[in-house]
Length: 441
Image 1 (cartoon, rainbow, N blue to C red):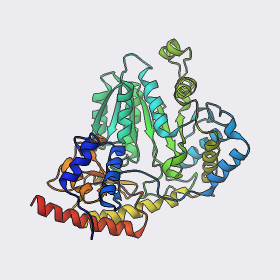
Image 2: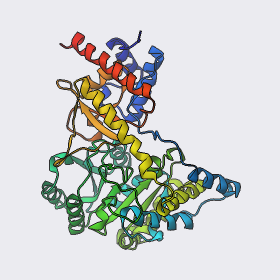
Image 3: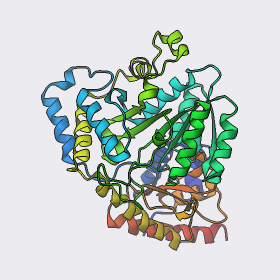
Image 4: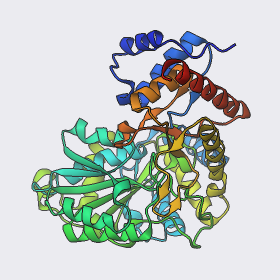
């Protein structure tokens, strides 16, 4: 006999205790904390769909390289702020192998995860030109990205790109960029949470508009090569991970070890600055900091002040994984296909219980199966849907926290690991259906 669903009064008490007035505007971490309170009430685990925690085992390539670095005493010395030489070289080769783009080792800077990379990039881009004071986000997107300019006090703007796919994107970007206020554009590809993937035509549009209006594109590749509709597992062979870097020099690519290598706990990523942008001189930066170069400032000003570099030993780990992947001895993409299997199966369970995909199309293709997807239920807005799901023992986040104007939740499949997780999801959604009939119908 399950202790779910909990009563609306019990749920409301949890929200009051945590100073949350509306669960649909709660952050990922807040939803996680609410879930922990609910588990304490019921004594039963929730189905965890809220957190993008890697759910695939580590490969020992990175672990052994990091252990060796620790044995060599690297923990007692500060790492070079721009990264160790092997990491910069191996990352440059890795990018060529899987993205088919040439970026010099000089322009590859390790960061404390992609969150640290984007935080510093957003800040730097906002200070390049006094006339360009706004960061534009293509949404839906990772909710924490949108919080960064708020924390920094930087003007920002979003729109839901799902309404402007294909050729419509050019007109929309023309409208926004022509204001002269957009300093940078940030998006993830594949997209978190909708899992839409930009086509080459769309990336060309973004690149051409960025060049025309001198906007810097910040491209988050947290889920690179995870559009499993295409096999991007073979280094130096097409198809490659699509990128705006093919169509402009105004770009920085962020690549994190968290998802592609399941190395989230070590907080290690790289910011990959185009050769031309790295060496571009900005008078405003020179006036502020005595350095004009975009790349030198990113490394020696922003990254240094923010974190003084990142874990010395973890740099050896990610360096080894980059090398093995480019050598073809570590097939990281094939291992990640497990997420696609989980997505496919869990989608079927949701649809069985009356749910529908919210973001369901990549222009004229169906959305692929991957790390995230989105689900909605007819007649329920974000607050009502998430409230009822959490009362029934299913934790997620609402789409409005990702900058979406649509009603639904984001589903992350990374913690759907065992057979019992899928059985539990099916059972809890059965409770959800009954709750709707009892309280709404």
